[in-house]
Amino acid sequence: MIRIMARLAAHAGCEEKLQAVLVELALASRSEAGCLGYELFHNQDAACEFVTVERWSDQAAADGHLATAHVARAIEQAGVLLAQPPLIHRFRQLV
Image 1 (tube, rainbow, N blue to C red):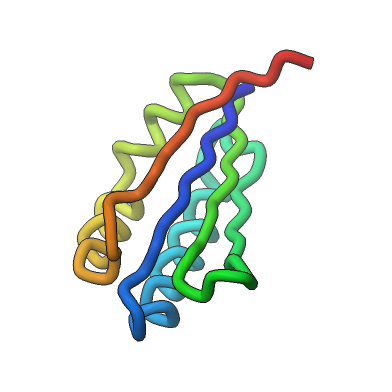
Image 2: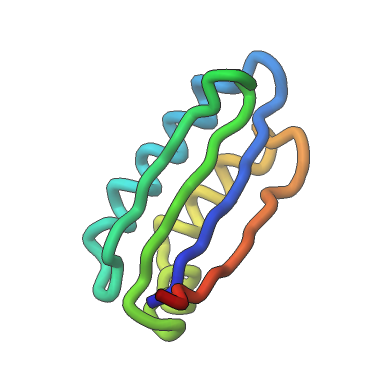
């Protein structure tokens, strides 16, 4: 199993718009083959920060996710809303 965690920071005042983009992305991603979970969190201590936690059956499923139309759409829509590039980390579960 592959886990991917991403931290996304919105420009001040763009939090609601970024949240809408990320909710749409999460809902679409959950129906993909190989998606075992896709969660979206809003940092209650930093209003501009969101975190996604994705679980994929394998690397091929995670890679396939990046090639979907809904990911391309989210990247396009989120670009102007982000205060910095997303911080994305891939993890492999050990136990």
